[in-house]
Length: 329
Image 1: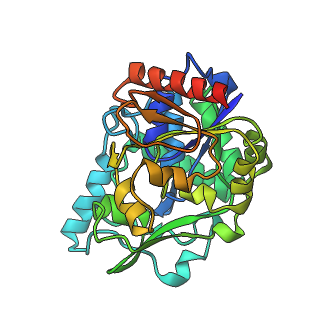
Image 2: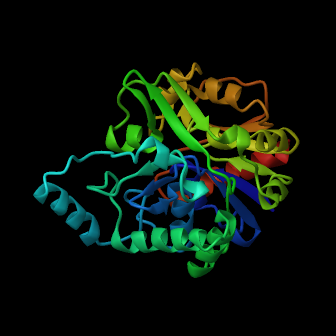
Image 3: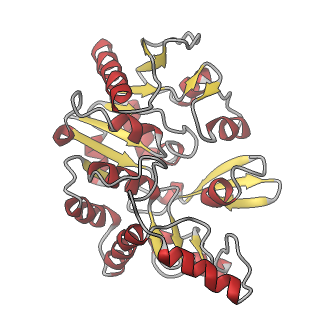
């Protein structure tokens, strides 16, 4: 049995070709929920859903977001209505007193659905509506995720990092904003001054998460700040990682990041944006998988390979390197 920590696209891209090395029936994935938002009353869990759709062979692998060949009629009509009514568009937070009212799982991350700033497909929206309805019926997020995993015939065990809300807030010269506003609506602008994981001090992992962290853990090449950082901000999760075997795959080659905003976020939080910075962030990691062109020397065992993840064959190669790294610890 092995457990992957997943967020963004890095770890899912690794999982996309890992079945021959890490059989899905023997694999647990713990997904980041700091990126979650409530949009128009529906709870959207991007990192859970990427793994859900991947395992259900329904993921849009062009964007690594949403469902393949989805339609967008509802999204398009929301924008038409906003334009026709001359409503202000862009990310529209609900009022401050509404951020902590209503369903607790959505606190600090509530947006109006008017001219929604994220592209939500029609079949994708059905997942969010079902999730939110089950939460409103009193089910915790872990149980709801299990129900959705059954609907997609998922072989892997998929767990949210907590049933409690944690919101990733990016602090900028223009003020604080949720990560999804900063990254999706503003394309990573303005500059990052700090990143806050709001609610992490009050959040606890479930018994299922702690049990999954008792065995070998793999951290794929996900963003160490906003994909893995919300998990590490939960004290019990970090303690568990310090007490188990961990292999991490760097999302960098030296100081060059493969994709996404990891470099800007690391620099903004005072961490060197590089493989060395990732290693410093993951002090609990016992070994690393680095690209064969990465010049970084670490004080822990390293397995090198081509860490490019452009398809299943690449993912299988990196998965084999992860397996070798687990074997040298």
